[in-house]
Image 1 (cartoon, helix red, strand yellow):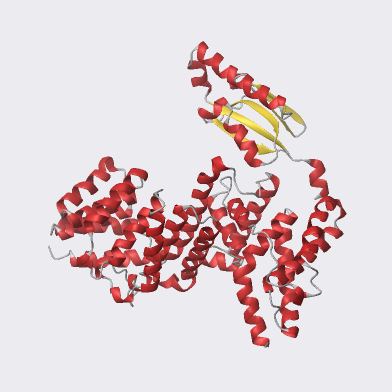
Image 2 (cartoon, each protein chain N blue to C red):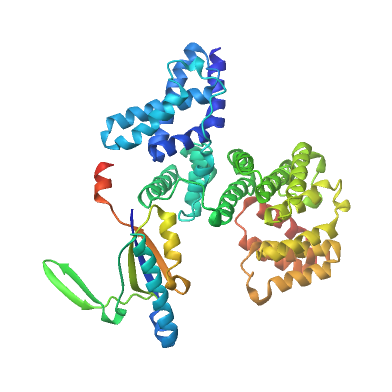
Length: 121
Length: 418
């Protein structure tokens, strides 16, 4: 079963920490990723550029609307993701709890729609 | 004979529903399929038992028939081929339902209710969903019964159950006993759900009593089940003891006019002696296990009250000591206020009032009914009636419970003549 782990954090406090602290967090991320890879559970994942680089696209009445943003009024922003394989929700949440940003931010755990399984059900 | 059959069916439904559905869920991997199969088995039982009389082991009979229904459902849906073999294995072991008489009491099937209760109370479900799912599947209550008990529309409750079951399926919430490192947290959630069900029933006002008393009975039944499934957990025993002891005072707690009667004023001859005896025994046993917790402490406090033959004989010093322990593990304002009330009785009203004021310092309990009610009671005892009156008025404006409001109105009338 595939789960998307969406990593939300406060960009301002991320920017405010020292370089050494940041390197420590990156090291933890690499270790977790390496461990998941060795068990075949890491499917993909990446840090995202800050929300200031985001662009919104909508198509309305056949016309593309490309704008700056989105800038929701929340203090946490989507800063990265892990796509993982886990046997059930408990395993997925255990992995989510080990993401370094879980200590300061929020990890949203979402199961992927598995089309083969849905078709069979 | 005929009456015997329907009475047996009703009893078996109450007693066996959770156990059977728990097994069917494990075998089918689906709450919906399990419920449907069991429902069909009960329908089959209604006619078969009327005709031939109830079988010797009704639970095994129903399990076997429900497993047949599940198999039929799976055969209709060939894509589930790999699950089918597992069910056939179980059915073969249980003997075919064509010979219900041969299903002796010796037949054993694993008790899956522990898996079920942990799944129903999984932290990824909302507390409302946990409660509804626990009562529906483990307790075997109907959607109508649960909706009535929680004063919700049936549609709302049905939707809540559908969404919860959908989440279990789509997010793959596991159907298993949690790993050891999570067990205590998960168990605390299960206990919280059971105690919430109890309190929903216990806090009900007079007009709602008839439907809601059932919730207390159901919570106690679930509490017993949890003790049976995990007998070495002292907090499970503490929770059961607490519910039994609180419930033992039910008849004395509200008078004929539907008014709340305080512990001090209750007619203690109305207390349920058998429940008290069982509750006291349980809490003593739990405490002897040496892992104290909030339910055990609350049960111990309730036990001290229950053991006093009159209000004046209450051992307030012991109650203060127990609340003192409880405050070390619980930051709840209710605990702080009850501690203050106990200190007022043991050491003096002034001391109690000082603690209440300390608990509400900074106005953080300003919108809390119990804070004003507790303050008002001590002010009244200190004969500061004007201040008491103001505090009762504030409490009245914050309470939505019919029984509580009647109680406060009576106190307001008493403190009027200042």
